[in-house]
Image (cartoon, rainbow, N blue to C red; front, side):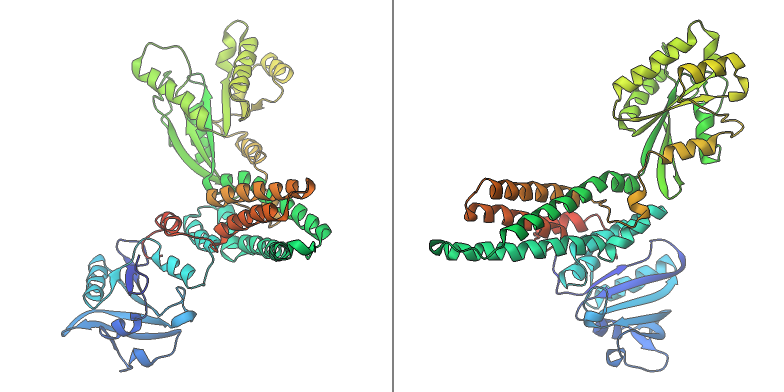
Length: 464
């Protein structure tokens, strides 16, 4: 990317709307804008102060394109850290395209994905983790993910990492200094304080690494597979959870041939429910493909809802068979949370209910058709998410790149601890410290390369 030229892009979603926002950034942004903007009060916008609004028209060679509101942000006082102009025009797609094409002819070029935020990073307005949080904030679709993205964009995560890095860097400098006086056998770094710092860094890193399990769930949602035999009410349960007729419901066994997915938010946490084909022996080729997909979705899910109904008790040894099926799922997927649900609760006999409570006590009895027990099911699902850190406003890691760097930093810190305990020479300890500092710097952007920045900002939307 060329970071000295002036870029332009549509900052609002593409398509027609009431208004659209066109953003220009670069050293010549105000000058270029002045060649096409005519203020209704006759002002020269190149002479106006930063953070001012101006009403006027976009014109060129006697042609008026639109009446607009133009905002000016100068130099370091802008989002990108360089001269920025934002043009609020009417939301016609034709008008948007005409104004952008005009600005391109006047000397701008189209911005690449995430280039405005990249310039903010390069100009010191944001560190790298804050810049990545901008993308997370745009993508947030529930309260929890929004809360975490806002915390990170304000620097909550990066400030914690930066503080640890600074303290480690101070000790690293003292140890490096000792190497210059190796023949005199002096110690500038207090070893007791250094041990305390290493232990504190290890504790913080482990806490941040552990938080990724929650952060990943909050950011991406929890996939929940609804499985069971045909006609136990899987599609009815999906419809009840979504509060809409999303899946076809029929008395005919095998109606669901493919998986149906949809997402809801429960107390700020996203859950992606997957209605699957009923598991049974069948000669139907299409249904067999659907059953195969059921097992694939069970592999991908974090939570499995195993649904049973009163009809299954019509066969001999039904309770023993159900217990056997539940044990098979637990053994096959030991890491997955399993919720056993007895659907159509109004059709169970007292004897069946007694048997279930005795033999499979964890079973939750509901009626998906009548929407009874749905709130209890939602509470059960929420119990699988540790939201304590979120409630306490603790730093939570949601970014896989940060997670990888934290793990590598922890490995280096533990190498330093081992080296100190075994009496490793200071020059070798210093190598491990420098490597830990490198991984800390990768998170905040103090250590970057073009490939890393390209990978990060390629996932941004154009205009941000």
